Length: 334
Ligand code: NAD
Ligand code: WQD
Image (tube, rainbow, N blue to C red; front, side, top):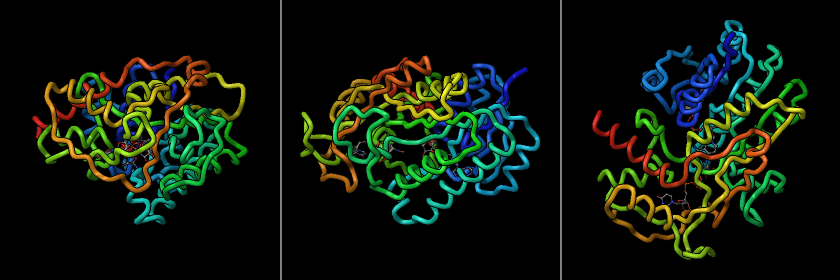
């Protein structure tokens, strides 16, 4: 009998890649999404890769009534909670929208997981909870810093409320570093409704001619080449860590894992790899720092490697190649 898994925000970037891995690992997936940052096209893309249809409900996770009706129809072994708004900039303009959407939906889901005796809840957190780290690389014991954005505040609030919850049997908090890339088939990738603010989608838009130039935000950071350093992880490696989290037979009720590759790349390094992947140069403009950016952060992910029996299959070059493959194919379709 296949184990049923609820995936909230399942049609989004990381959720959809995770669904592919779950289906390919034999789980029966039930996805819910309010489509605020995704579309139903993602269901066809998942089917194209896996050959399987998944159950889908269009609903908002902040509606207890609507989410409860899904719990009543299914018998969930686990739930993975991706549903959230994720724009750092937007969260500063609409703080209450972010607090309500991200924190209240987590509260609703947590309550239902307890009531319906769901064995395992996996929560999407972020390296943003570490703020500006005093040292790199960052491990899970690093003290959390005051959040730099309302988005970051919502991730800290969700972690806190889940940690305080008594009824969840097995809770896994995954702190992602910088997810990039797309499915190697080229049939699935990042497809936000809102204009991108992250590095790789913007690079792709410049290479496609949709933007004139790529702005490097800041060249005077205290890093070897002066540009910011991040830990870029392939979205499919991230996705597999969710499957492993469900399979993981945890002895502690709570586990927190960093998910990164464990190596920092500067913006300039990523630019070099990207231009190599696409086989040409792109227009680059060296611009002032972006407000709110930290100089450098990268992860120690040894805990995830050890306990989740997980490691990254892809490096930055693969991730950029797959992202480029995805946007090039998608662009031809439209
Ligand atoms: P995404 O926007 O592509 O996916 C989120 C999905 O959730 C979207 O399909 C959206 O429509 C849906 N959604 C939002 N609010 C909802 C609600 N109230 N009810 C139902 N559906 C709702 O984002 P993503 O990049 O796939 O991120 C997934 C999760 O990972 C989020 O929790 C995000 O905060 C977290 N995260 C993302 C990154 C990143 O850089 N992408 C990094 C760290 C953590
Ligand atoms: C990466 C680097 C930019 C665009 C954000 C969130 C974080 C997490 C991941 C959710 C930075 C530089 C970017 C551009 C540039 N999300 N850059 N020119 O800011 O590390 O993290 O996404 O939890 O919480 O803050 O990611 O992709 O925006 O930027 O030079 O046009 O690329 O300055 O150094 P970031 P990013």
